[in-house]
Image 1 (cartoon, rainbow, N blue to C red):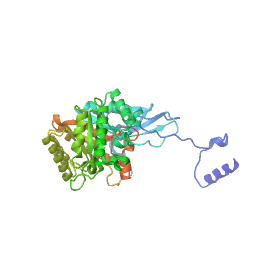
Image 2: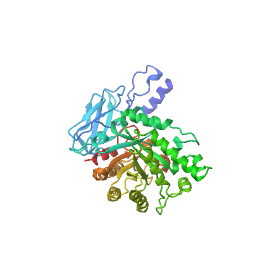
Image 3: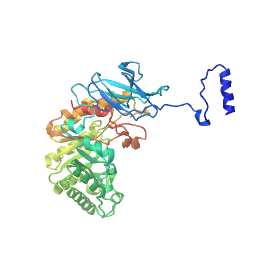
Image 4: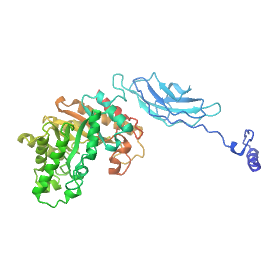
Length: 451
């Protein structure tokens, strides 16, 4: 202890005044530290108020709360500049509608003040609009769905699914490589679990996808039998699967992504090689034979941004309609970005489907916030852009003829689970929920699109 005292005296000798307390033990020399709060995302958002809370901080006698109109906290909202509060929750009121506010909090005790907490933001709703936390399925007059994985039909995933959505699409478990892993071995374990969960909880199921070149089992790619044997095998697979879920699965993507991006030509898949150019027609006829009541869709990506590809797919559908080949709807996947495509382009592409009298499904919606990989974190500005694009998408869909409305499906629950992270290899935040299950501005944008 003598060495420590000598060091303190030297500091005092060069002119830095120090107030000493009594030394009781070697462990009493560390200064007390008051932890900063960690704010949760605001909830109970209305046109004029919101609620924010944080875990209790040990040693705190109370908290100081700041609310501002800017992230730099130069434009404070009266009287919320350092306002004292005794509890670890607070309702901010008397606010303006449709306005973004920023909140931070400090812990305080008799002698100490902590650093500022993390900053959270919230946008109050339009005076006549839905609250940002309103369930999407309750606000929409069409089906709102989400892509799910069977191992995440529990916990907070289940809680949000049951609150927000009335339809699910299996992201992986209802594709051929999962349901037909080896020759002669149909395995419905995971698809059964998914469908049964939905039925038990009162949600519709959109089956995705019976035939897709990227989910073809290796044994099918390397099939050694005759072309006729291959076709018989595919017919049996489709009819067995569709019959199994008759009355439980509302709709199917029968064939997925059959056209190339360039030139509008059919993709040269093993199905086309073995069954001919009319393989798609055959698959749709088999599906209808297995379940006369199920809704059947063609589903593809880049339908808005690639007009040549869209025209080719729609020409196929028109031909089906002219010849009585069964088809009920068209799925536009809607893997888009915050800055593309334009609302006008989405409207125009949607009209090409609705003019045919078909159901239109925005089937795999996600909105990339970081397409150019120029962000390490999601900024307020980019979140606003994303919110606006989601709003535009929903506005377009909400305005199509009622008889063409099938639904919008969000391709995943929260940002850290999106398929885009692996696909593009860089950060992005394309969904409606943050990694901590709190809803984003994009969620608010969906609701705004319904107004």
